[in-house]
Image (cartoon, rainbow over the protein chains, first blue to last red):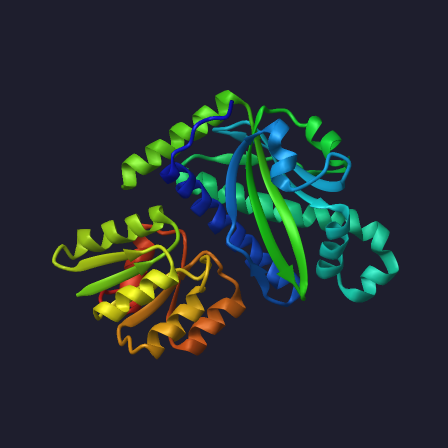
Length: 201
Length: 121
């Protein structure tokens, strides 16, 4: 049973994530020296058990996920997940060509964590600023494995999912931003969104 | 003054409308959730100011600026977007329209009004 969100509440959160992804794209664009093309992000709230289907992933698909613990008004974890294949495309896009050829193995993990840290911090900052609450991030880590195993390791019963499709240097890269929240944290988030809407609409 | 606000976010449209009407209660503000509706509305009546989101389903903000102009729209236009990359800002400049960074706040709406020549910056 997932938390019930009104259309307006989803809209407010999607707009906050949109601002976060837009600011992350600007930094990524500076890193790669090219425009990052962005799709319109789509926001969904699902049970953790239903998250894989929402991601369009099979349980055994190999994925890489940057996991970013955060605290403050809501205590939980955010993650940015790619299929393993797409994660290589992303690394090749953000790491200079000559470096990628020489040290792909060494650089790949750092590059993925850097991108994940950037995108997730931007999203958390945008949500925090919108709602007027501070969210503090901790050190991110990289988790690899089968999609079902990776999600199983995460605490929290509900996931807020943002599917973003971005393209860097003609490579299409599907990324999935997920925020894992237990019911108490989801309730606190919903209350904060309600306060924001009451104050502004 | 007649304003058309085009954004797929209802929250963004509502805040833009509220801030404009708070400052200019005699203006009229019309909302469109996408480019197709914006084009239909602009074909029925002239607007003086257009606030246009870039990242929308269907036609994006850049395409909408071009299509509005092609159908004769003469109002001042501003792109109001979360996509703050330099190439995006440059494309807005190339089109001759103002670029305002989201998030939508009273301050950024005032910047929009200043950019289209209706408010002190």
